[in-house]
Length: 130
Image: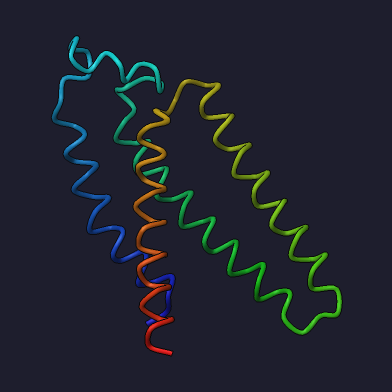
């Protein structure tokens, strides 16, 4: 099984229950008022899912960039360009969603972090095997 499929499968085991758990609290309560600093707390569930999708898309973009540079003489320039393009697209998506007040940045960060943790875990596991 490929690295991306492993990361997606493991991330789903955390993201799906976490998304359902985010439906439980009353986000309008005074105890959770600090979450308004990160955006509308009512969008926490969709933000967690979007964060995971963005994290996986970023991983696939990184793999695509590295695979496209193999076998070329201008690998460094091409890799830098593709990395900056991927970063620009990532920031543009996050800024547009934040400007439209359709996400909660804490939820987005949580979703992206889950994918990142499993990426690190699988990378260390593969490094140890080799």
